[in-house]
Image (cartoon, rainbow, N blue to C red; front, side):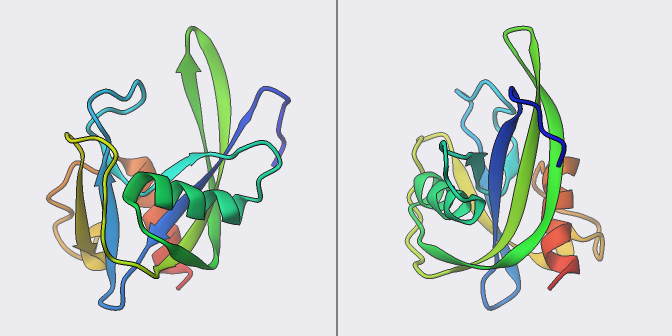
Length: 146
């Protein structure tokens, strides 16, 4: 990764259960970035935080679940615009096994769904949920490298 000092580091948790379903969470409408979009738990790393730890922390913050990293499955990057400034975002993606099952979402307008992996890989007509191409690619990294 060729990072500049202003770049952001993120980590994502692709949570898969024993039945081959992937956990997706719908973002709150109050989010500045991608409101109401379905995706995997993900967020910015804290200063000095290891990406694996960040993926598990974001999972806990966004769903209440505890998990364990199975392995790193890939990397993604995107450019975001915040107050007129473009920022390059570098994201490490991890396959995570859930250790708990009681999901608690931070905002009342959020939702979650366990979606069969086949619906997210193009093996069927596609997901019924509004999942953007970026999140689909993150999930495909985890499923391709399983």
